[in-house]
Image (cartoon, rainbow, N blue to C red; front, top):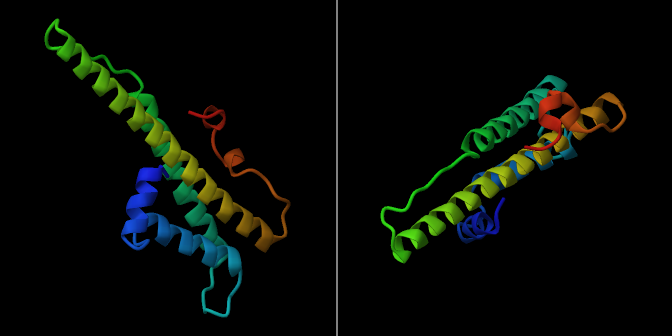
Length: 140
């Protein structure tokens, strides 16, 4: 999550999606069967949440792939028009960077659920990206 999003979430008292997801992840990580708070998850539920995060990460990857090619032309041949294009390209670059950060966040959340499921089932630690297709593992 970008620092701008973190500042917004913090100014809203942590009511953003990041806080809710983090709370759910903590509940799963701390209660593979049941916790003192009464949370309990079946292995299938943990796997479904993990898959949701993986699917969302793939959506972000696809968005970056589709958005990677942009061509802007200045409306005129004066410096102000060229500055307008430079500003647009910088905004676009920041948009792509934001999508990539969101993908990484989704993968990190998926990894937490993957680790919880592995702990519950007594399996060794493995990277959640092993569940993605080979075209997705090397980044965006």
